[in-house]
Length: 215
Ligand code: DX5
Ligand code: ZN
Image (cartoon, rainbow, N blue to C red):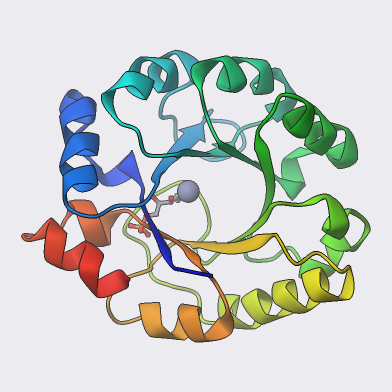
């Protein structure tokens, strides 16, 4: 599985989002990571479905929506209509996780589940065969520019083992938070292939070089 570098626009200039997305596309990004935050599930507020829909026409790259929100089921239809490819909900935000995953797939999108640092990988055992992606959070969600939590590496390995045990050979592991030139090799070695990077890409003086260094 080839490495997908997914810049998170949380660290982009919010007054120029379309230009920022086009800039990282031109500089080698594979996918655009969209952090939807509602100010309840996480202590920060970003943007919702209308902004995602408005950005869709500025790039042909896949959109990877990371829902750090309560009641994520209310976002699925809108994200599908907006043209999003991957939708990841938080395990901690879903009372009816199985139902939400079905809803995402029925809407024609790939489904992922994100785990906060303190949430064990084993909580995904029952749904492992249905997943297209497991997102291992390597920071506590809500903000860019935080330090990578080393035990996330163990969780990436456990997520790979969980998928293998479920016979799910198609799903990918995504890692989000503190991914940069110092931590990238360790996350690749652990088995993550979708690498989210916010500050390491948008904060770099040379974004092309930054994206290349993560590949
Ligand atoms: C954090 C978000 C991340 C964030 C990562 O809650 O989910 O996607 O943008 O930022 P960096 O790469 O700066 O840690
Ligand atoms: Zn994210």
